Image (cartoon, rainbow, N blue to C red):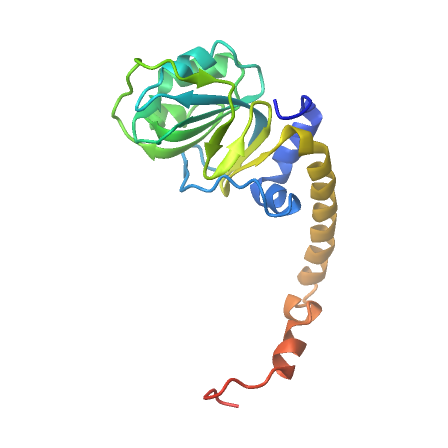
Length: 221
């Protein structure tokens, strides 16, 4: 792990805040930026990362990981060169649910998506594809991986919702949570002002800046 174990209450609060708030509060860092397909739209969850590095087009390491996961984990699966091979389907997902996994972030493909959509866990995948995986490469479990250009270490907090995915290093979770709370409080106050009709264009001084700026050449005055 990259830091001390993160408490379940901290994980839950980060999850409730959601991807966008966590990313912004962390200083616009930790975004796992891929074109994720939300196999289970409308769900929001966070959990400690159980990381899986698979061999090319292979899912043997996923089978091994399911013998090591803990309740509340998010399984983060990738390859050195991610490919649209289905490394998780309904049978592996059934095992994941039985072991208490709350989310799957699959930097590869999943299949049996209709069945996955009925399961009580949040699933994001890079692809949906029926092409099966091999079981020829052991791969590695609970090692640092890179997903969407961002490092994810075992035990880091991974947040999933319809906006995508974000990670908070375990050693930074307390600091980020403080920033999340402050951001939520600030947004609540602003929301109340906007609901009363105040405009951010004025509150942020943008109108005054625009009116004071020279008119661009060639633009109507």
